[in-house]
Image 1 (cartoon, rainbow, N blue to C red):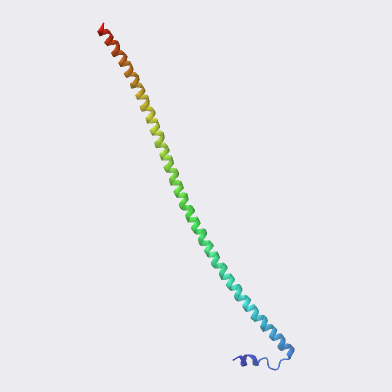
Image 2 (image 1 turned 45 degrees about the vertical axis):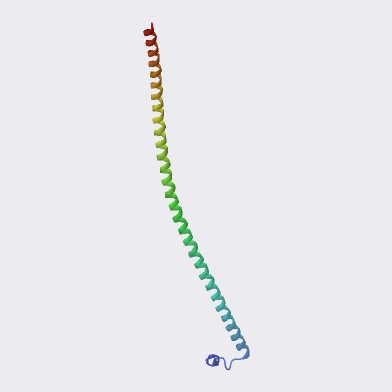
Length: 120
């Protein structure tokens, strides 16, 4: 088959044959270069897809973290409100204890006074 391919070159001058050979060499070289660039392109496309997937995963993780953060902020707010309510309730109860303690002291004094009166 290579003989049939080479037949068209018969009868060409040496200078033309040399030019044909140079052009064929250049074509082979360009084919190899094209294959290399095609491989580079495919490698870069694969790397790009990998990076796109990585970015998408990061976006999903960021969205998940934002939702979790929002949930935690709401929980913190809820706990803060509960804490404030408990502190208020504690203040009310301390106030009631102080009032009852005062009433108890007053009652003790009254009792002591009455006991003193009874002894007389």
